[in-house]
Length: 408
Ligand code: NAD
Image (tube, rainbow, N blue to C red; front, side, top):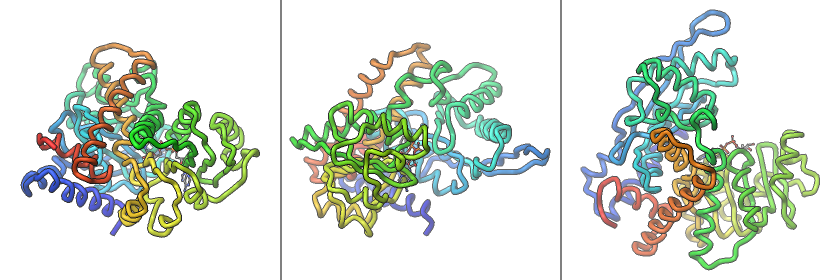
């Protein structure tokens, strides 16, 4: 089975399994599992040499019971129908678990953007936006950046969309650059939200966990480590695609980032021991933060994990088999739909600001983010106690109950 198919199966199985905890009927479960609509579009692009190359794009609109579909657009060679279906399903659950009045969507184009020139990338973005324009809108479906797409690409897409509908509609795309309708605090939001949720868990469990190892030092890993460091946590290890560094006395993420900017990787940071990526995952730390890729904690390494808490900042970093072992070892994992929900929450704030034609300060954004996440955490925590479930199952129960209009 392809990895995308497996991700879809895993999400659907977990929905079916947890829906039973709130007594949803088979008919209700089927209604939630199946996406509302999957749009497949042809994306013909004029290339540098004047020839037309045709790409294939998708937009999966999974469920809009709670509000407009919301989710990113990725440009990647592995994009597939199954992948956008799976990711849009997880967006439905993420929005619901975080109490956002939004549903789940996801889009993508099968392309390796690294093989395109800047002009070709712009043509591709504009053509894809024109193709999906009849199906999106600020009250219908609101895309955002995802893998290999960013604020600049959102602006190209928004321009095409606005040309099509012949009016301004900035709330149709989020993740826009600040100053062009984007929200302050969005860049840091996913990492900041993860730290907030981690602190909620530490408070609930009355623990004094301090040491952290971070896998991945991109947007999420960097801001998570920077904000955790500022709050007094000790970041002892950091990795990127080239390798990992470890200093049991602690690392200052801002100093590490300076070296990354100058020399390209964390491994060039001198005041630390070089270790392998695999060694980072099994260090004797309190908290492990996978913030890079999916499926990194597997049956091969799970037995050696020593952390007491895992904060799933990447989407799907733990395989199902590994999850069962972690539970048996009493290691608590904070599920991705809660841990990395800060990003979509601040995207929602951007949508609100655009619609109200207002600009919130960064302090306002962070304060509202904290309230939103604390509410979601408390609900999920209480469900886990009441139904004796782990936090992943509880986050699915919390989301499914809202979608199905049931009380837990
Ligand atoms: P990014 O591209 O900015 O950073 C990824 C980092 O992971 C880089 O430092 C890269 O070197 C590192 N990396 C790649 N392979 C690695 C490996 N094998 N071992 C160690 N490090 C490795 O991406 P990002 O935006 O930080 O996203 C990271 C994860 O968080 C992804 O799973 C993404 O889906 C998820 N996520 C991101 C957001 C967001 O707002 N950016 C929101 C929700 C979820």
